[in-house]
Figure 1 (tube, rainbow, N blue to C red):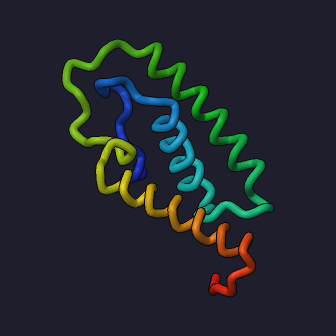
Figure 2 (figure 1 turned 90 degrees about the horizontal axis):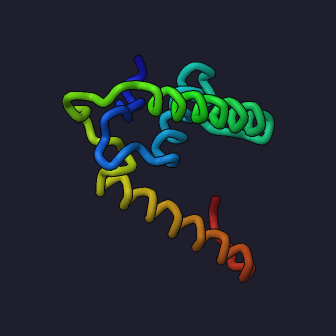
Length: 107
């Protein structure tokens, strides 16, 4: 099993749609070997991720409650991951702003 896919059943509060989608995307990346989504892979990867997310949501709803919560905290609930995501968004916005202003920069 892929170590990057976190157990979502039994979380308090329950797994969010964002967490389920992140796990589905990790699964799709693992089984396809697609690490970076490109124009050529975007549509099939997004479609598969959406379908798997729907299946996982139904599965989690159908399973009985867990007696113990999962041992690992999902990545999207970890402060260090939230900080990395926030920095990535900030960097992307700054990069886009540089394009809009016509400022020379590296890619």
